[in-house]
Amino acid sequence: MPKINPPLTDKAIKGLKPGNKKYKKSDGKNLYIFVEPSGRKFFAFEYKSPVTVKIRRIVLGEYPILSLATARDRKIELLKQIEDGIDPKNQKDESVLNFKDVALEWMEIKASNVSKTTYDKELLRLEKHVFPYLGNRDITSIGALDIIDVLKKVEKSGIYETTSRVFMLLSQIYKYAVSTQKAKHNIIADINYQYTFKAAKVRNFPTLTKPQEIKGLLLGIDSYQGDIKTKVALKFAVYTAARPFNVRSARWDEINLKDQIWQISSQKMKMREYFEIPLSRQAIKLLDEYREIAPKVDFLFPSVKSSVRCMSENTLNGALRRLGYTKDEIVSHGFRAMFSTVANENAHIHGFSVDVIERCLAHKEKNKVRDAYNRASYLSQMRGLMQWWADYLDQLGVN
Image (cartoon, rainbow, N blue to C red; front, top):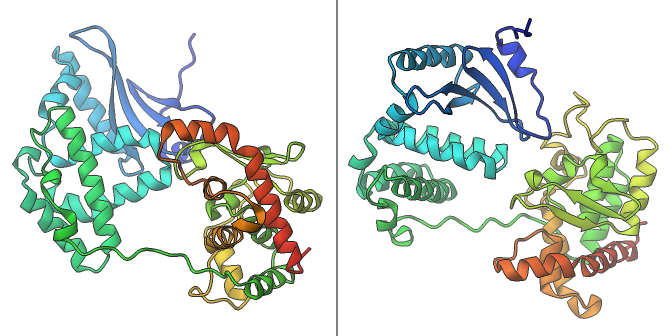
């Protein structure tokens, strides 16, 4: 007899771990929960079309925003349509005209190209700032003035950067709506953002750039009395100038100690592209020594609460506060600005170009042809620059 899987439960769904590829688990009767490598989970209804006799899929929504009970109710509705000879996907395509449905369709498409963190933040912006006012409106009935009115509410709260981000997200949604003939015109293109809304202040992460300031910081880290994982993570962050998330979530299988390189998957990179950063001799020595005492788990810097999770978002900044630095003096993301400033100011000494500095920071080259060339040709120069940076730090008296 074929194996019959038991129905899903909330406990079972929460316990599903992401794998290297997207996979699904059945709840029975055409309902599935899908789990993506990013950790995102969503319900989908799969069925044989009574019209085309082809297997089709309808994405119902993301878990836990869409509950298991609601997904089952939706499944029953769809099964009734199929019993009546109706292809529910055709019905759905014909009826999707309200803004919220179109926006969620776009978000489902976008989900595979952005990190789960980015997806969650953008969905939250829609749910908080847009859906309450436009969610149930027919998308064809919404005009530019309606959009401006919604964005003015966001601007009135003083969060100008969020206003800009919501505007860009709305632009993406309307481009999708026009391309799929769910809207006739991209009304966002009619809005001149620069002359309608206040500009967001440029966000600069506080950092230290003077040699004596950097020396003081490094000496402070070297004498840090807290958790050894945090101390090593701070040192590693300075040596690599990597984004704090990449440092916190670094895994041992990403570190090639033999070739002295850190290989980061596209899913963990801001620009969603695989990235390699050469490791200096000092960084390799740091990891070699740390590995002898580090927890025997996948993460270099696991959470204090769970070995299957990485160090928390606030750990590095919290350590800097304990060292006596305020959030206006330096944050962990400021290590990148520190590297960038010092490297640019000393370009006449180390001899590497601005392009190499930007590449070490994983800043994307806009010219795609040039970008492909850069990836192939800059690795050795990146190695030279990262070694110069580590030597520079040593010359400040930190070994």
